[in-house]
Amino acid sequence: MHGTVYRPYLCQQFSIAYDLYLDIHRRTDERVMSLLGRDSKWRMKHVCPACMYKLEGEDKLIFEMLITMDGNDLLKRVLR
Image (cartoon, rainbow, N blue to C red; front, side, top):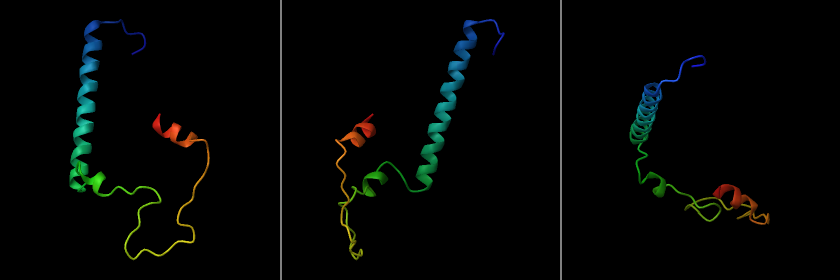
């Protein structure tokens, strides 16, 4: 694209092509997730709150929970 004279229609064509690419990518992801059985409710059914979720018959761990006092810095990084 270097050395090409700017033409307004090229910008519009690129924008349309990129939008189509993103749409194809999104639809492909949706189909793959659907085929894997990971539809919209899959995440809520399989969520595991860290350290608080216990399964029936699960072996007891030496430490039930590991905690760190970091001034909430990790949470600040996650929320960004």
